[in-house]
Image 1 (tube, rainbow, N blue to C red):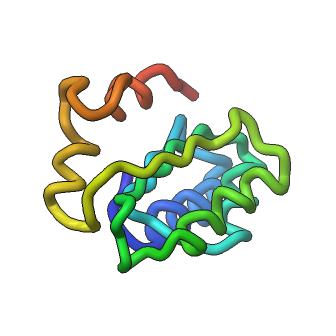
Image 2 (image 1 turned 90 degrees about the horizontal axis):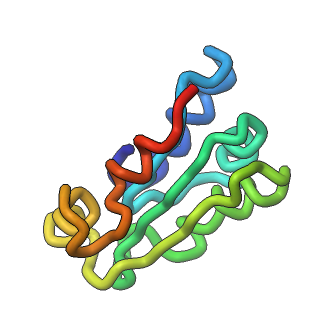
Length: 118
């Protein structure tokens, strides 16, 4: 998982290419990115759950959707999950995403990630 801008997508893309995919799954949080980053992640079929605050103005919707669209463009599986939660790009939103119970997300991101192995 990673926070903000394009970092999670970019790291996953370059690492997957250079190291034959060391990721079982990724969870970009408040992250936008490039179309080709999503294509690279999709080519390795890395499960992805991308979360964004519905009121986030730092990462516009079109930026958040570019890597998702790239992933879908190459037919990666499983189909990536894109979800918006109420809240802005700040600690309050991140507290919801990283909550260890199921108050905001069921499954929570830890439960979701632990279902994947390499």
